[in-house]
Amino acid sequence: MNSNKVRYLIFFQYFGTKYSGVVETPVTQSVLGVQNYLQMAAQKLRLVGNAKFTISSRTDTGVHAICNSAHVDIERAVGKPPFSETILVDALNHHLVPEPISVLKAVRVCDNFHARHNALSRTYVYRVVTGCNRFDLPVFERNLCWAASVSSLSVTAMEEAANLLLGTHDFSAFQSASNENIFRSPIKTLSQVDIKPSSSFWPHLLQYRDLQFWDLTFKSKSFLYKQVRRMTQALVAVGQGRLTPLQIKEIMDTRDNTAFPGNPIAPAEGLFLKEVEYEGIETCSSGI
Image (cartoon, rainbow, N blue to C red):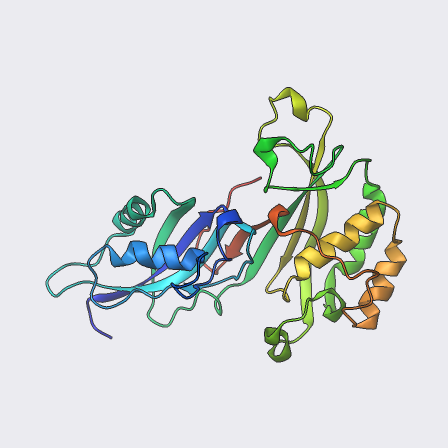
């Protein structure tokens, strides 16, 4: 590899509502992916060749990231030294304005490092709110959570169901149809599934005082297509009394993604990729 070419691991975050997911889309498409904007920002750094970002974790339209990651090879002209991590972060962010995308950190890695294959785990958080319907949700929380129920949820029942999802299982029943699934094993190991009380991003506003926010957290090395959103929908159904915890186990055991009554899926806007973990590399995720 050319001595002027350096591979970096890039941690970045974004507000996903305006993008066609995170991965690159054709430039002729009216709505682009986050990757398009990262690459356009990199090309403004006067590099040799094109800077191609390899994304660690795909997210769909409307899904946000507190901390996603990608690797990219940056090659400068002969005689110019590699960018320092700090300068690269500042330069990319300068060219990302005014997009709701921010580069958090850059780490120089070895030439064979792969952002997706080297990831140890991925953690997603789904934000649910009760006490209002979607039309009454305060404007500052729109597109950032799911107004799942006007009434309260039975969190005890949800926790019982969540415990049944922990560990290694065939999660075929909780995946959505995708060509990618044909080549991926449905066997996944969930090391964390929990439901914790949370708060609004704007807790000081009076209109939030009657609302209850919940964070549903899922951690695994990898997930199937839309698995987190389908598991969230199932857990909320348990909290509403429409399903029992035992039925969640029965649905999972069918290995049939049409077994869930009505085949519903939680909306994209409540989902956040919180963290992608690597061995020996400190990540940039922050609590929500």
